[in-house]
Image 1: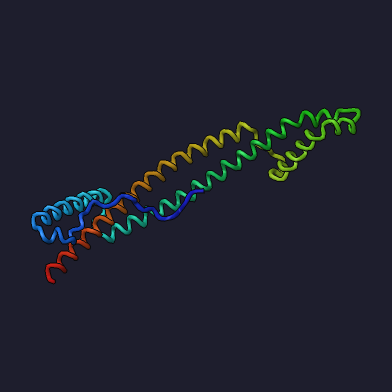
Image 2: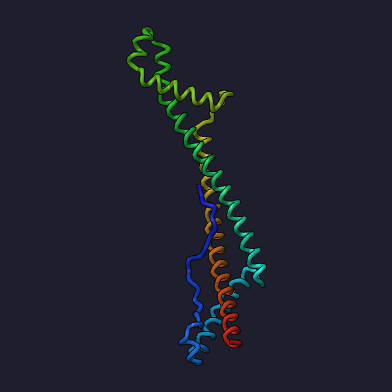
Length: 200
């Protein structure tokens, strides 16, 4: 099953902390750091613009919308995987049933059923167990053909692969949005610090 927790970019922002004494003591160094910070923030704003985000509020909305998309996709991926697993189990069961059915047919035709049953106890037991499980799974006795199950599984795997690509795209977007959000936020915090330092 897939996780649905929060996605956070592990990339550190490229902003320079200018609150250190070495920046305050050197105007050229501080000026250089300010330019670098503006360039980095501008780069992040360009990313946000590409997503159609023009404000911090829109950024939050966009992120929340993509998180919701991610949760939906995870739910669909988990449902697809459950169905694939169910088909795998059913295929194994049908193969087991078909493998031991000829032995059961031999048993039915046998003149000495007791002797045959003793000699083929394990195989007949496997047949009975498979038949019982299939009867429970298909009470109407309409057991699907292996070819039908295989075709359905191929279709489900193709759907899962397509959704996985979409999932990866959303994760990349969320990481980029989170990185941009932190960069812009740190830049604005830096501006606030500088204004406060100038007043003090």
